[in-house]
Image 1 (cartoon, one colour):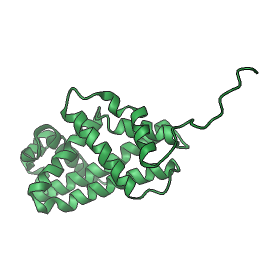
Image 2: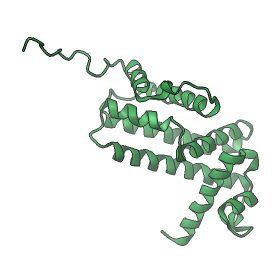
Image 3: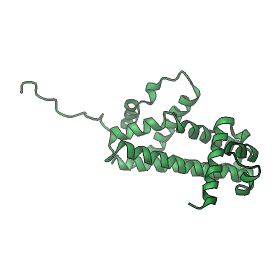
Image 4: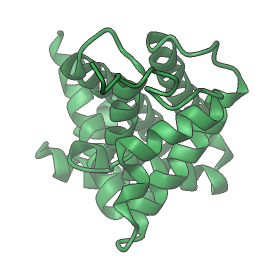
Length: 204
């Protein structure tokens, strides 16, 4: 990777850290330089306006989210089934570890976009990335063809994630694989996994 691309990613990652720690109001070129440990003025050389910095952070966020889900899918293994899909989605909405930073940064970007229409393009890009990830996972699990239900699934999981990040007393059972699996079953009108299977004959 060219050095400029590496430096650009370093700066975008630092911008995400600033967003997560200080909110959108704290995202300045100076703050990103300090977070990245770079000389003052470095960030402005790559992102010459605050809007460009927001857009760069948003694109990096989408790329990192894709990479995380891909690595998680590889960790869980293939072929992907309904149980593994529920495990992946449950971990994504857990808001733990690296994902906590990414999700906090994402929500800060969306909140900033409420007041700044110039950010709408990056918000649409983030939303589309989220939906594309969901469609990819659903297709890998061979669920019925994703339609508007994938948007409903994304919205439900986002709501659970938001509560997880902002309400310390939230019941973590709401985001465990079993509950997420029940949500998938309900949205896609699937029987619970294992339903309909013949019980073993105890007389044998």
